Image (cartoon, rainbow, N blue to C red; front, top):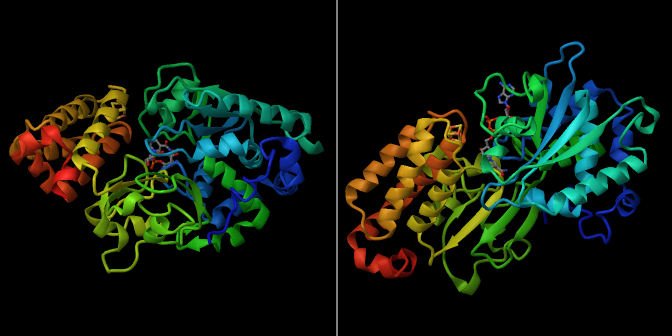
Length: 441
Ligand code: NAI
Ligand code: SF4
């Protein structure tokens, strides 16, 4: 059984409110942290080995230590709650059910970073959650954990919640900052990174909701103890939102030592595939990461069980591996059609492209139209090569990772399921009337 750090109190009635949260040990980590120096806190986070939980897996302590500290210039912490990656809903769970964990993590993190004004930028579609967060902020303030002179230490902190307007691109950190400044959410060129020039050109750390929540157990346990959980560079626990063809969709906390097979089939997690269907493929880290067929999903290249962690999921690079990404774990059974699934993702990325770079603006729409043609039984063999060519010209040639995110699913689908694309082309009549999954698998 995986150890629970973030969700350990999730089952307690009323944990959403200050009283129950505090009664169950809440805000003790703030009391501990405010007795330490900001430098000591950054060291603890570095020692913990925590990696960003939004998708990129960048070491959090390192990001914090990059924060520029020019004299007299305010610094900010911005929590990225614009969780929009298809298949990803773990941050929603945290904010909805244990909002004080995020607020507690923000107080500690803001103190460590020297920020007195911090923000939560939340996706517009999570329309009911800002009220929950704002109530938690009010409760924390009423109890002396926010506002002026927190716990008599002289540290001041205000937290504001900003609602997005429903654009996926605003989850890209620089687009988020543009939007927070009141502008259109167009990504900026990096460098400079936000740690040097972020919100209103001030040094800013942008971290995901789960990353900031994980600061609480790191301070409770100490960085060294936290680092002992997990394996290798995948330390601590990770929230996974599981969906698709599984018996028990939901949000699970895992300690990154369990195998993918155990995660899919054990009753503790996904509980297997409904109706005894066969596992066909999985996208383990949100829609942007490469899809893997069952044979590559369950074993690494040297035949060992593939584990639910950053290194093992990536084993073999994109030829035979994928990514942990945002932890949005989507399972496809034997009835699912990969061409149709890829087409649906291509439509999504085309719709969400901000349009600043030509390869992304034009390429995503082009890929969508070709995939639509193939799915509708009107494709040719040359279309598969053209699709491959287009995706390869998007990857690495755009301002922000949305271009890569649109290209990778297409590349992986062709790499691992080329026969399925060919079946659509060779069976135009059949594919107008039924899924490849039902017909050809
Ligand atoms: P990235 O790898 O460019 O950056 C990671 C973080 O490290 C950023 O905060 C960046 O500012 C910082 N960083 C990197 N090098 C730095 C340096 N030299 N100095 C200072 N800071 C530095 O990746 P990015 O664009 O932040 O995230 C992409 C990932 O986001 C994708 O892999 C995808 O899985 C995920 N994603 C998650 C979504 C969600 O809903 N959770 C939505 C869309 C994508
Ligand atoms: Fe906009 Fe796409 Fe370019 Fe990102 S890659 S800046 S979403 S056009």
